Image 1 (cartoon, one colour):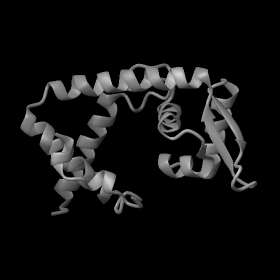
Image 2 (cartoon, one colour):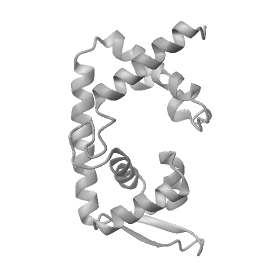
Image 3 (cartoon, one colour):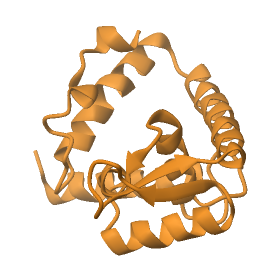
Length: 161
């Protein structure tokens, strides 16, 4: 039930998680990489989806068009990505990791998996299952969530074991 007390508890827990996980640090990822969280997420998406359309990246990251443009310019300036016109739509741009960007994305991936491994190593198997069952519900409940029909977030727990 969405009582005021429950809302306050949820807010306090989410705030505590954000702070403890290091999400307020704009210059480092929670796994300790010297890069912003949004830049790290962009590199990870580009590692998973080479030649992604810039608008698709914007949608995946949940960023505005202007924020994504600034992010892309930053990554391009650092030599981590290339931006080129889409062969399918001359108005759109596709993005691809450079070798430097690919190395950094792979390093972020390794460090991220290690960090999450450390987190779940302190939990029981039951707690891990509950967490993996609960987080998709929380994601789906977020206002403006575009994940409601995304099966990736609604898979049964058995797929996570």
